[in-house]
Image 1 (cartoon, rainbow, N blue to C red):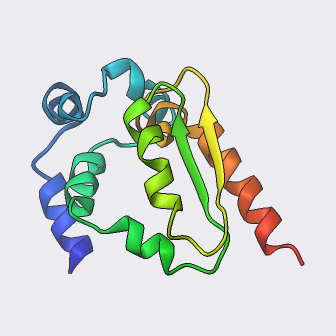
Image 2: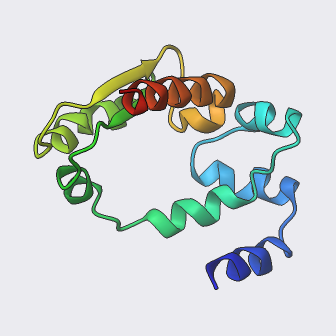
Amino acid sequence: MLKKLFKDLLAFVDEQTVLEKDMGNFAFTPADTKPIQEADGSIRIVPVAVRALMGEDFKARLAARSQPVLIVNGSDDTRAIAKEPGFVAGMSRPPQIVHFESTGHGVSIRAPAKFAAMVNEFAAKVTTP
């Protein structure tokens, strides 16, 4: 059902509209999303996904995790970095925290290749016996 909703919503939105209207609401510029577009990716899902996550209690969800956790923020995203201690406080084990230099909010969009490599490296470490 959720997939169909996304497909229906995305059918009415083009990339340029998302860039001009929605992404600006999340402090992204066309230059920020260029790596995704150059890789033939689509940013149309980003505003939908962000809105779907609003109101989610991530602190409680992180505190309930016993698995290793990776927290990635951009070094220029001072608001997110300032909130990290609150997210980490209730966790049973310390997470790995990474700050991408000279990167703002939304590192997975602003530096997708670097972000993917970091996630893959983390996943390989925690899944290897």
